[in-house]
Each structure stands twice: as structure tokens, then as C-alpha cells.
Length: 380
Image 1 (cartoon, rainbow, N blue to C red):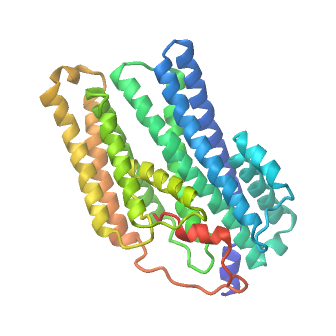
Image 2: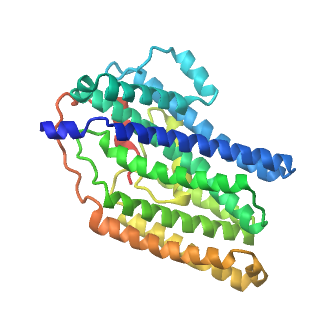
Image 3: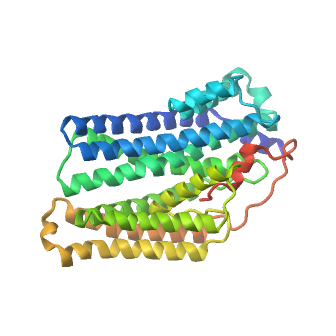
């Protein structure tokens, strides 16, 4: 590896501030959702309050479980010790109180600050130190991706359903929608940027235009699908049965592929269940295999949902067409679906790397628990 390549791979000030921005979005998302749940409770709308709270707790608990066991994996490896000398018991207590992600943000921001402003030469000249920082960032991005699809995406669906189906709105509701949307968008971009950056033996995925088109493809397809789901829920709350079936199919697919992301069987089952939730909203390459056929099937199914849902309103319950924003939502569904498919085809036809090339890095021949996680995680 050349000196220029090494310097380009250093942990930068831009990356440090982006991490701080991700923390802001995460806190804002949790706080606005919590405030909205309290508001619903005060208005005696207990079902909405309970559902809003449920999504917050689900994402929080799942993240604490994965974060804690990843810490245990890292502490069991001599080459990748956790940056502070806390005991397992103290880590467990912090995670029981929901502080797992904040603990990881603290370690990453602290080590990143030291690498950039305190001792930049010693950190950026050592491949292992750079590798450790990007692995810490990648672990955090994976947890944020879990949180986005377990909390932000379902929260968006719930609030869209309440806004359209019951004509209820408040400042807290709009704040919740905005923070959930941007937290989801940020998680997608950050995950893609860090997934390969943390694997120094593989050249980084191209950024710039490819990242922008990838983000547009994800946001258009996810947004149109969320709006379609919300209209289906307005038609009948029993549409939740259909969403449950989609989750079960996604979970079963992950099981049939025999994912090997976690070090324990029970944790692997939880991981596959989380993958099932993610597949309700968007497609990801679960095991790094050629999934062109599966992707075509998935987005054909999503397109069928998007194009048929507004028509179902017209045919089955024309009186519901008087709902405010119906025509706007229908336009967003059709437009978002088309633009999402165009962005998808453009990305995978012209911008997605056809082959990931190996790039030799001195001092990183041995795989660590963190790098193994990144290799076996879902691919963009």
C-alpha cells in the first residue's frame, strides 16, 4: 500500500463531526418519539402511546443485546481490547440501563479526538490503530441500522397512519416524522460508507455520485412502501397480518441461507428476526451472495403493492378518497416507486462495483471479532 493510500485512510475531522451529527440525530429521534408517546398518553390515546413506546423499547432492547455481546467478543480477543478497563459487570449494568450506544459513541468520539488532535501521527501511521477506529465506527453504524429499521421505520409508518387515517397532528408528531426520516437516511448513508472502509484489505466502495444514487434508491423505495402500508392500514387494521407474514418470510429466508453473523445460536436467531423486520421495508443482500433474482422478486412484489394500493381505495372504499392528502400521498407513492426503481437500476447497472478487489495491508493479516462481524453483515 502506498503512502498516499495510507494517508487517505486516516480517521479525519470530517468523520469525527459526522459521528457527532449521527449522535444528534439518534438522540433527537428518541427524544421526539418519547415526547410524542407522553403527549398521546396525556390525551388518553393509550393505544397510540403504547405503540409509539413499544417501537422505542424494541429498538433499544435489541441494540443493547447486540452491543453487549459484541463487547464480550471484543474483550475475549487479545488483539482488540475495549479501550477502557471496565469490567464485564459494569458493561452489563450500562447496557441494562440502555446506555450501550452512548457508551460506543463515547469510546469512538474519545479515541477519534485523540487520533485527530492529540496524537495524529501515531494513530494514522499505524494500520492497526486506523483499523480499530473504523471497526468501532462500523459496529456503531450496524447498531444504528438495526435501530433505524426497528424503531424509526415502524415509527414513520405508525405516525403516517395516525396522520392520514385519523386526521390527527401536532408539532411533536411532525418532529417525530422528521427525525425518524433523517435518522433512517443517515443510517443508510453511514452504514454504506463505513462497511467497506473498516475492512482495510478491501478497497473502499466509491462515494460521491454512487452514494447519492444509492441513498435516493433506498429513500424512494422505502418511502413509497411506507405510504402504501399506511393506506392499507387505513383500509383495514388487519393489514398488520400481511406485514407479519412478510416478516416471517424474510426471517425464514435468512434462516434458510444459514447466516453466520453471531457467535451464539440464540443471538443468531435474534439477528435473523431483525433481518426479517428490515426486509419488510427494504431489500439487503443478507449473505454477500448474488441476489439479482431475489431482488427482482422483492421489488416486483413491492411495486405491485405500491401500484395496487391507491386503486384498492378507489374500488373498495371510494368514500375514503375524501381523506385529506389522499391524492398527494397517491402521487408520492407512484412517483416514489418509479424514481426508486430508476435509481435502483441506475445504481446497479452503472455505479455499483462489479468486483471488490483485494488490497494488501501490512499488519492486518489476522481477523478480529469486529472485522468478522463486518464481513458477515448484510451488504448494500
